[in-house]
Length: 502
Ligand code: SF4
Ligand code: SF4
Image 1 (spheres, rainbow, N blue to C red):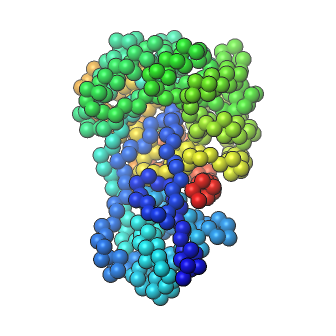
Image 2 (image 1 turned 135 degrees about the vertical axis):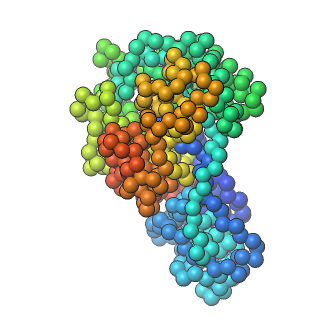
Image 3 (image 1 turned 180 degrees about the vertical axis):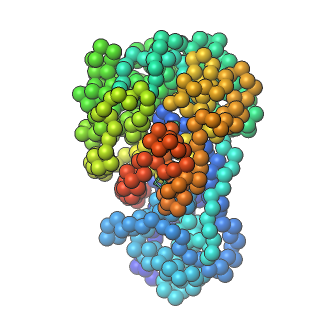
């Protein structure tokens, strides 16, 4: 008996936050927030859990949902339910055999007694249900849209920048956000947050280069914290920066303010310099590296945003190796074509070259797996860590406020405002707009409606899709790239779970 029992437990490893664990499950930490330059998708989209009563485990028949499955090694298989919230689950062979009993719908007791009459077998089958790997026969899972919890605002504290990156979408000017305008903007953000029942506010202090107006950033964040306390809302503030000018004083101020940091780094040495340079052409890598060293000494951990273009693809694996060695969380974001970058011929990539470079980068990750999950960060706008039906919060829970208090729907459309911070609820105007950038649900996108990956991919950036196709309601031009890489990302997650959770 004991041999058989140990064969079936421990058998499940997963990395999700909201699942009740029991003694024979492992759980790997995945709680690192990756900041990038887009609005997170709204967080009110979730699967409808099947309502189950204790007796159902004995009476109801269960079946297999549509699952992504891969045999990882001789003893472990990776399972992933694209309509569930659990994420990647690892099963050993005994558990997989048990799961496979449900190719034909049956009750849990029937499966355990007939084929797998082991102590612990029934509890194991119940856990397969709880993890979404089994579902009541006939259930068609349909995620539901609820109330989004987080209002994200891009605060464009300056339109100036000390770099001249070729893929930037901004027409830069020396204009800075004045403190008074910034306070109006903060008040408008909190009016929209309270008016629309958000529980959290996330402010991205951005530009241009946000640290060029650092005094204003710090003052505005203090004011935002006052309003958050007044309205009993959670507040997160993050500075989006190119990382070139961080004096000891700035680092100390950031440390005291509680602000988070996202720094752009597109390569190591010359690869970064080829893409992120000063107006005089000099590269900025040495400056960024010095900042990373200083932040490390101060105990601050920035998120690294890596923008992948054709120009830097050959160095992508080394870039990933570099950030992993420094134990920095990072995201990989694909270059998005835009009007300013249109004349630069060597930025757009081909499907073949980016897939090959990403696979090379994934091999590097496999050799140095981080403790935190990468599910939400390494394939552009896709997030395999949380179900969502839109790739970002545009038109839902996102405000972009420029240095003059004009409000747009996306930072890439910052020069096409639709309202300003004087209106009572700028988010209401953003939600009502039907003229500018539209962000339909993935279920409305041609080519996506029946896609296995749709609630993890959500169809890609609508601004990019519109530029490429003239439509918002079609699949992303990066679709083939995403589909080819998703299984590899799940595999990396499974390997990470194996490494840290057993
Ligand atoms: S863009 Fe492609 S991978 Fe993404 S949801 Fe649409 S069809 Fe699926
Ligand atoms: S529309 Fe595209 S660029 Fe704008 S926030 Fe969404 S994903 Fe980002």
